[in-house]
Image (cartoon, rainbow, N blue to C red):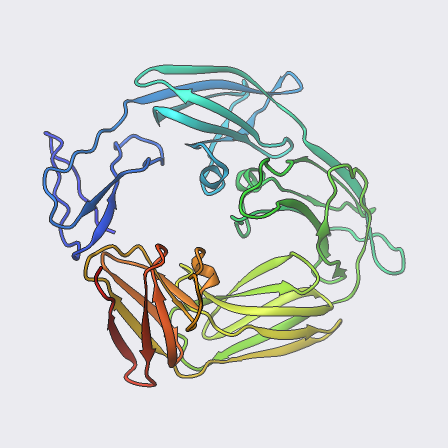
Length: 411
């Protein structure tokens, strides 16, 4: 990434970009976090023109059952779930339920109102240029409301247990604040001394869904008295009771060349529940897991790199097991595309035809910087290097040296 500040005449000069093809964005200093589509440029281009829309101020009042909502968040994004799910709500606290958000770029937008205790509310709005837009009264709804009781195997109530609803979606945020949790469609509650809980604000999955079928899932756990596996929450359910069972844990370590691997992903083999754990000094741990079979995977923060073979483990109640990733020697492969048309480079086994359109389905991939892609952790062997367009070339990775280069054939 390269940045530059325009001068008084709106001129800019972005320096230091390697040869290649880029997407260039611009925003005003007081503009909200929305860069639009930008323009495609190549290093060395001159007199590139970017036209920014005038920015607008939006106002409105948020009501629940005709009463002002005093704490809520507002997201303004391009239209589409893939845009608003990855945004950060701007928080508002107002006894009147009113809000004013400045710096909103003109165009077709989604405005999403979120907060604890009510379901996220999505508006499709055309924002005019350079004017103030009053959205008026925005009436939000409770969403799905559920309640129930959490007990242990003997039937005794469990106080201070956490009941959690999350929406299984392409973008998940770990340990979200109340507004991010509401944006994701979920809710959280803590049981009282009698093991009772209640929660509201559970949002229905968006329609139509994105890459996969989305659904809500519910779980309950207590740090000392056990947990239950995650299960699907039906939209018609209003009463959900839980009986906690004894749980187990995992202590893990990674041996071998670590590279940029930064966290571990764990998923129960019979559940959609996925958790993420950081690598700290090559070690990782997971606590309070329901007994059963799990799959562990290593990953990098940006998703790039060669896939590491997953690890299968079995968690036993009231025990901690040890999991060890033993990584074989690998190399870093630098691929250069001479005609500068690289956005993503994938490695696939020989004979894979056509190449996958989704990079994460490949053996390894990397986002390009200009005309270059660097894929870490590649195991020695024969592959095809492929662009999403379908252009491929055979490449052989030797056991050494530790860093190897490959010149992708020009068109």
